[in-house]
Image (cartoon, rainbow, N blue to C red; front, side, top):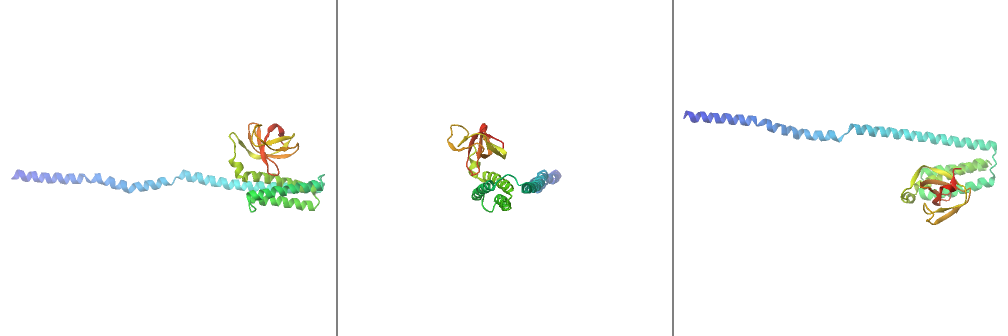
Length: 241
């Protein structure tokens, strides 16, 4: 009887020890379940990424400020050129100024149709055209012609960049210029639909005509003229003005 009692007491003691020893096995799992969401939250916020975004935003602000400063300087330079032409009474004739202003109006209308009347680009070109008209009324024909040419160049650049059709029709191997290039035709030639003599002729240009280049493919340059016509011309037919 004593033997059975001793065994019973020993069994109870072992059972109590086993149940006490099992508690640490369950505790870590509870802690793990509580701490894992906190770990996920900390991973969702990347301090380094936030710093990079902040630096990029500051760089963007800096770029915008530089663009505004350059625009102000450009307008001041234009005004200085116009004043100098008014004092010097350059050799540009009334007819030449009137012709340049008419061409600027045509390019402006083309830009309005592609970019919309309320766009900032149209506003800039419109201001130049109005300034040209003001100088013409003052009989500063050189200044009027200069401003009209500025308006045409700016409108040509904006019109090309705003035309989705031109962007989507980039050919294999075509490389865009960083900035539009003003070009002058050196000898009479053809503007073709593509970069090669196997493409059809779109129109012809005479020596001295002005073009704007936007991209190249081997020795062919994608251009447009003041009226908005586009195509490709071989590089030996043009040069910088």
